[in-house]
Image (cartoon, rainbow, N blue to C red):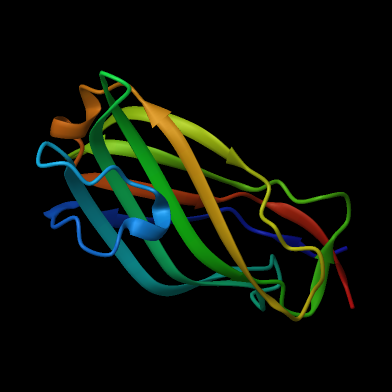
Length: 154
């Protein structure tokens, strides 16, 4: 049975303007700080070397904002995933992220399963995770991990 290999990609996070964040519900105050990173596309290969899953428009938005009288740091990750010509045998193992300062891992979070109910179709996915507020200043890179999965050909 084919299997998808674990695939890791890196995105640099850079200070950014708060433009275009309204659809994410980000509080738009003067004190709101944002770091953004993006990657156009990448493939997750099967153990045979064939493409098993495709990802595109991977966007990471790290936000430090005051809400309800407290400062919060939140990572919002959005992407599109394509199931190619296969479906997971039992759900999918999902994705995770590592937040880094240079090469030092600051935090690691399992985000969960991809929304990918059928093969051969693109699906929008969005994840959010609350982080310790002190990570915002130190974090300059994110590693996105698409976990290994056992799949069945269509």
